[in-house]
Amino acid sequence: MDLDQLAALRTPEGSAALAAADRVAGGDPLAAAAALRSAGIPGGLAAAALTQAELRRRAAGKFGAAAAGMFLTRAGLEQATRRAVADRRAARLRAAGVTTLADLGCGLGADALAAARAGIRVYAVEADPVTAAMAAANAEAAGLTDLVTVERGDATAFDATGVDAVFCDPARRRAGTGRRVFDPNAYSPPWDFVTGLAARVPRTVVKVAPGLDHALIPAGAEAEWVSVDGDLVEAALWCGELAEVPRRATLLREKEGPLLNASGSKRVPSYQLTGTGAQEAPVGPVRRFLYDPDPAVVRAHLVAELAADLDATLADPSIAYLYADEARPTPFARCLEITDVLPFALKRLRALLRERRVGRVEIRKRGSALEPEKLRRDLRLSGDEAAGLALTRVAGDPTVLVCRPVPPGG
Image 1 (cartoon, rainbow, N blue to C red):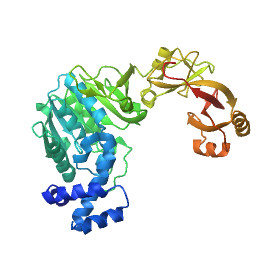
Image 2 (cartoon, rainbow, N blue to C red; image 1 turned 135 degrees about the horizontal axis):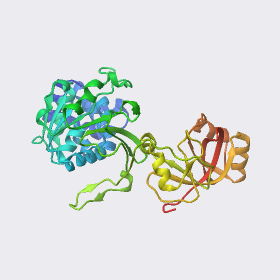
Image 3 (cartoon, one colour; image 1 turned 30 degrees about the vertical axis):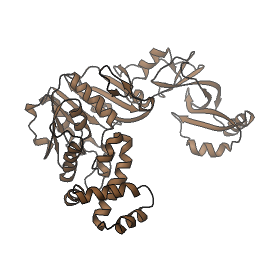
Image 4 (cartoon, rainbow, N blue to C red; image 1 turned 180 degrees about the horizontal axis):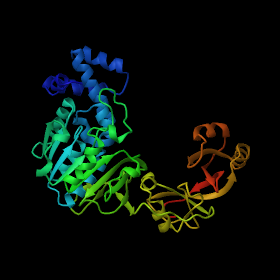
């Protein structure tokens, strides 16, 4: 995609091509391209429209119905914030009194649009000319041009003295190749600029990869990890006046369905666990119930706080499985009842499961080198019963826990 192609897609002819592409996308790409050409759509415009149609289909999981009118790139879509996450962040900024926000490295504009929906005036900056043009087009499609201004430029040169807060989502993919960048010093803008923002703007939020090394968290910042329906999607650093606690795990539950707030607008159910991130959970024996914490809880180093809530212990100090004598409802972990604790031995496990006519197994693991799919094949099971397997270590020994799910409510 280049600026000329984007401009062509925004003409009446381009809109017609996009509509036609939407009708044929999702199947054989060669047949779809042939269908557009037979409809008289020029080849270049047809290719651009089909690319957008496919990206919009993928984007529906992140942006919902709004994806149908957005302009996207593959790399931009992969890094863009899910709408539920962006909306929650924007609501927190608005509740903190933010009315003007600089979005440095705005990408396709997902966070800028969320902030604008929350009533915040946004000044967005993006270095890539095509991405910047798409962000502006997305603001127009959302009817938010009165609250969002997109500027093509260098985020490090933006004068942030006139805004209440700064949001920065540094690019974590190399320009041109789209390859992931794992070294924060290779981010764009660079890490030293990103971490220096908080010293210049009292309210700064930085979106980072969920695998961020805790050693890189600036002193005094709140580090938050966010999961959506059990998938860890991002982390964020809340700096300066926005920092409330050292560590936070936020769990969003889109599959539970939206809730209505006092004003009647919809929001995604969310749950939060906070703490220092420095506590250690007690260690004890395997007990009747196994709790598998949400990945946001694990990455935030809040397993000890969850253990205290559940009166639970670890069986191995390096593995984030918790064990308890009773099942307590919690949104922060999956609870399973343990029926058998076995030293791992394939033949013994296969015999036990066949004896119980188990034909379907859900396999999870922590601290085990075994590959679940290979184990599933090696078990060669048949039967009409189901069971859960947890591959782990207990006191350093490879162990398999045979489990069954605990119904909601314990």
